[in-house]
Amino acid sequence: MISLIGMGSGCPESLTGQGLAALQGAGLILGAKRLLEHLPAGCTDHCKAVYKPEDILACLAAQPDTDTAILYSGDTGFYSGAAKLLSLLRAMGYSVRVLPGLSSVQLLAAAVGRPWQDWKLVSAHGRACDPVAEVLAHPQVFFLTGGGDTPATLCAKLTAAGLGAAHALVGENLGTPAEAIRFGLARELAAQSFAPLSVLLIEREALPPRRTPGLPDDAFIRGAVPMTKQEVRAAALAKLAVTPTDNLWDVGAGTGSVSVELALAAHAGQVYAVEYDPEACALIQKNREKFAAYNLTLIEGKAPEALDALPTPDAVFIGGTKGNMDAIINAVLHKNPAVRLCIAAIALETLSVAVAALTAHGLAAEVTQISVSRTKTAGSLHLLMANNPVFLITGART
Image 1: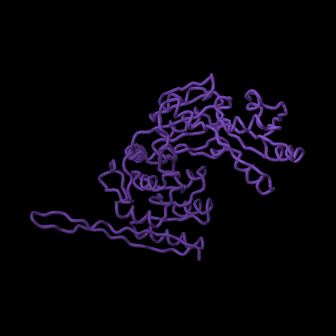
Image 2: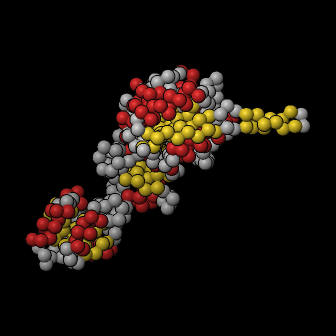
């Protein structure tokens, strides 16, 4: 019989009764060196410090009739190597059982006397992790840390995005005599160092409620900078078919109204608002803060030059070009020939240039005209007052 055993904190005291019995009854014990150094009394001396599946399988093949215990830190079901090995063992016909252990989530929750059923559990240990997206999407996020992503680096990323006021809690060496718990704000813990065996809990304040696209115009902080109106914004997001994980560009972002809408829609993605006018840049930052759109990054510069260093976009909104329409479209399509593209135009000349530029790149331009009228009271009467028509131009491969 092969037993995959979760050893909790790595101390004998955190083993379950089943795990302890399986360890003491095994003729061969395999696992990481750190775990083998803390075996309970009554275990065999026949131990090997191996943890890679191929090395474990070689040991098993050399002793096919020996009851073997394979140790894992924490719980066998929480970001554990046990899952991969289990599938290999079953495919090879081994008789195998899984004995769970105490996870770092449970150890932290117990140490601070808190329930953990509402925590979002995320591994930043050897995995791609976007802490900003996770914290924006969930009010309580538990991070399993390790490698390049430590509690400090994760808190630094949150601080850089504007989430430095989030409450942070770090558990070090949980379940061991060296256990320590540290509390603080994310921006405070970003400057500290922690033990290699650490986990992080982030708790943020409630964010403004998120809603479908088309926020009221008066919800935004405005100045003399032109702003894309509510109905046009809603239509533009529909044309762009924004998904939660998209990377998005807003070129000629103005007040940032479209950028904010994009950031709220792509809450697990990133939005880059490209703008060079100083007044507009200040408004973008203010609206970013007002709507807690912390996945929105302001790029101060003029397109197309400012686009060079940006990551490949899934979709791009072009609200202003300062006469550089063709060069901007060139830059966008160079980054991603299959990008979803929507251009806003008020002047007929801009419409003509946009259609010509898309056609020159082999795209079939589709033009939608949006005409909006709103009521205005005049005494006891209600009059419809028309806004300037706006053209939305999209392009698709023919």
